[in-house]
Length: 621
Image (cartoon, rainbow, N blue to C red):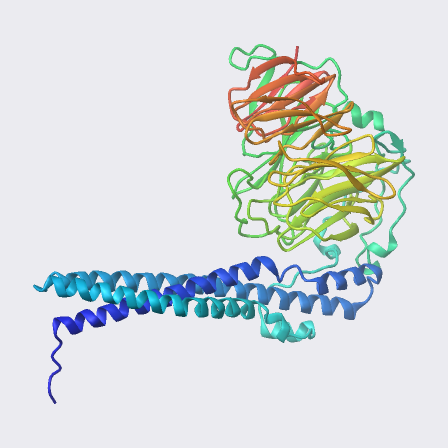
């Protein structure tokens, strides 16, 4: 056998061929990756109309076991399709990296060979001719390769067409993917409330109206899963709610505080008007809530999720309680970003118990001495930043907006024992906004926002009352509300004023200044908008005309709060701006906290409570 003799030119030709092959291979993979990604974004297999239809049928007939099996089976198949698409994208990325590495190595080898040649002119001529030929082939084949890649991307994601719903048992045999339960958790996953003395329930009055005692929604909770009957605690009155600060953004979640003679200015550096300052052991982005002499916040890290109770007059830590040993709670913490963390949702209280929600999906109820009443896990929220929607209470129901990548819903848990009272599936994408209670034509509504819908619900049973399609993007701000108009906004989307009633409609829109996180504040015919790039703007709430704008050096994440004729705005640099609520800009006072803050001011008993990144502050005259 004759030994093959490779000339320098032969080696160069082989290197050129490998390089061009790597270029074409990388081009094909790149285009297919783009096509697959666009297809996944356009037709998200996790947003299946078929699954939503089955869930709606289940709400109508919660005892249909066959329907439950079909839902579980279809859910499993949908998520298998989704995970397959994700695998295709990851594999394509590795193939693309391989192609680029081969190309780079081939070019480096070709360059080393060229350095050995003496006939430089002929080499340059060959290179020029090769480039011309390559351009022609690239032009002629590029279009065909692009179409082929697009078709490959489309067909690779429409794999659900090959599936038909099977029994849950068959699917479990063929896959170890976790099955999401649609119905409320079993009683064994809920720690029962401690028995209390029987008390007659007083009438709970939400903003501006008295509401009748809640009816039991039998169809929402299957008989076999209903929690044991628990003695109801006394419900607080409207006056009690307004005298305290029970929720995120006040007693209705709309940014209105009903305190008077509240402090306007302080000096953290000198301690002027700072009644006390304490360090919170674990970090959290939730605002305080206050009832009576007790103030509550949460903190969390990968080791523990904790509720802290302080004496609001002295700052003494009264007790702390861990949210641990909860059935269904994840052993490994979900991935969250630093600016959200695991303790972003603000707590809620009804004056008898306090309720906390963490980024793990754990909900815990404690009495005012720190004793656990009940706890449960809602399922780990699939959020790429972390869960931040805060809690609110309507009568004896703890209301939770739970819009995640795995699906969106709003649900009500019994404040007495944690049992599911109702659950409504929402046709929206992931949202970080919080629920708001609004008095609409003499009846309380629950108002939620997320892409693409702003919607109203009956808090008694979760029935959707109206929707308006006007929102887009990853919605963070909650809505503002006043005089029958809902104000919804989001950065890169719009600011929409929605007149609600028998038929909800957008009455005006504006897009000059839009918030990323801070919620709109509506009061006395004016609307305040605070942006993440540091602009505070005031609009006419009736027609959207702008009265004034004020720019600050730091962005604003904390929602503006109204109290005693003034608007309190905390920017991210820890600077508190107090502005008179008026058609002309009038600065009342400015103070420096001395540390960064993204939490809204809280008011109770003539004092103001602020949370920075590390400390709690009590401000008083």
